[in-house]
Image (cartoon, rainbow, N blue to C red; front, side, top):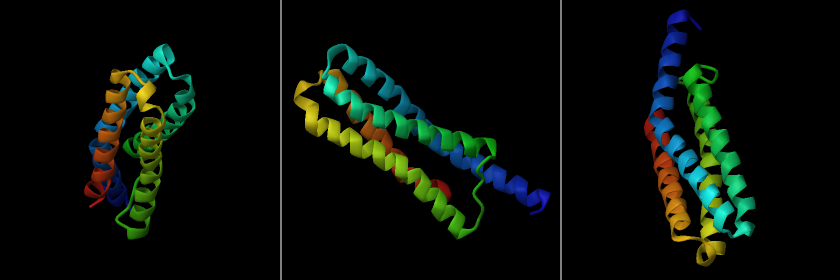
Length: 137
C-alpha cells in the first residue's frame, strides 16, 4: 500500500468514526445514568443485564476509537467492509437485545426515569445501526 493509499484509508476511517461516535457516546452516557438509578432504586436483578449492556457499549466505543486512531482502517475492499459492519453490529445488537430484555423483565419495577433512559439507549442504538451502512457506503 502506498503512502497516499494509507492516508486515504485513514481519512475514510476517521469519517466513519466521526459519524458513529455521537450515538456511541450517547449510549454510554444514558447507560451511566441508568446504572446509577437502578443501583439506587432497583431492581437489583436488572444489574446483571445492564452490565452486559455496559460491556457491549465499551466494546463499541473501543472499536470507534480504534477507527479514529487508524488502528483499524477499513479499506475499499468489500470483504473488509463486511467484516467491519459485522463487528460493529455485534455489540449494537447486544445493546438492543439486553435493553429490550430489561424492559420486558423489569419495566413494572423500574423508575420512570430508568424506563426513559432505556428508551434513549434503544433509540441511539437503533440510530447507530442505521448509520453503519450509511457510514460505510
